[in-house]
Image (tube, rainbow, N blue to C red; front, side, top):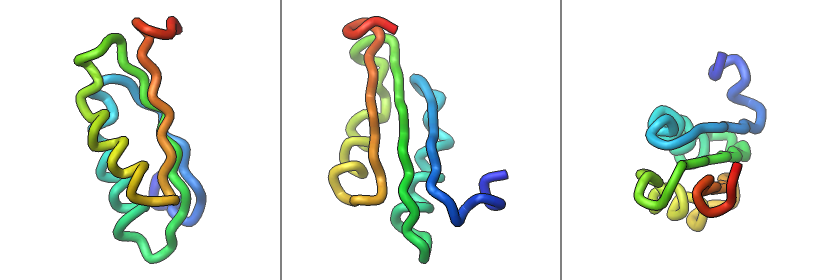
Length: 79
C-alpha cells in the first residue's frame, strides 16, 4: 500500500516503540526519494523515558522542510 501512494504526502500515526518501522519510511521519503514529498508524524508516548526515538525524530524535523513531527506525552498533557 505504501508504494502505491509514494507520490503523495504521508501522515503517520504511532506510539511508543511502535514508530520503529516509520523511521525507515521517513528517511526514505525525506532523504532518499527523488520526489521530496512531505511526511507528517504524530508520535505519542505514555511518559518521559518512553520517547525512545524522540531525539532522532526531532533531528530529522530540524534538518528538513519535508518532515514535520507532533510529539505528545499523555502523562503531561492527558489524552
